[in-house]
Image (cartoon, rainbow, N blue to C red):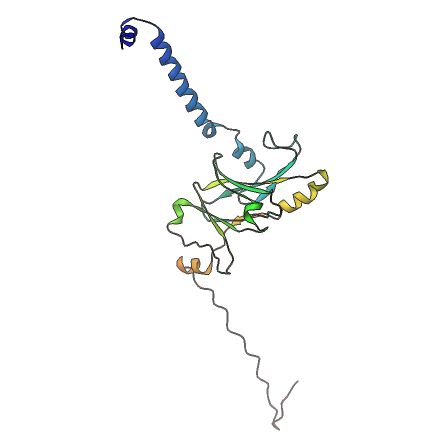
Length: 226
């Protein structure tokens, strides 16, 4: 207490030094946290220049044409920029190997979902991306009308990136790995019959079958086949 009283009564520059260091630390942290929101050439902007929403694209692996920095040369990648503004998006990743990975990020790079081939335990998956704010007014389930299993992934934002990673064992596997990545699809969800009825859309009724024309009879009572 005596030392603190002495330091506070004596005019020393250390108080200003501590305040300056603390303020610079706060400014540095704020700048780092705000960088994804103010950067003009972030991952979203780079991928937007070479893609359309709700479609999967295989990224080039060579360093000269790679759209993202620091891409591993022994890993093949594919991505989809999903947009949930109007409809939910259906992801059907193909995970033929335990080392394959699907990661889903928000528009600003926040990872909120990851699944590997080892965790999936099956090659074909069905993931339905639903924004959190729209989940309350929609009816979604882990079973489709065709009794197909699906995983409901609640997204914190309406836009983001789904990224597939596939390790390449050797250069000979590059072609087959790229072909397997192309089996992954990303598309807006088609409305089900229940959703169409709930939205008030008119039910499509099939036209009645057309009866064949009746055959005429001649005067003698026999059928005329001409």
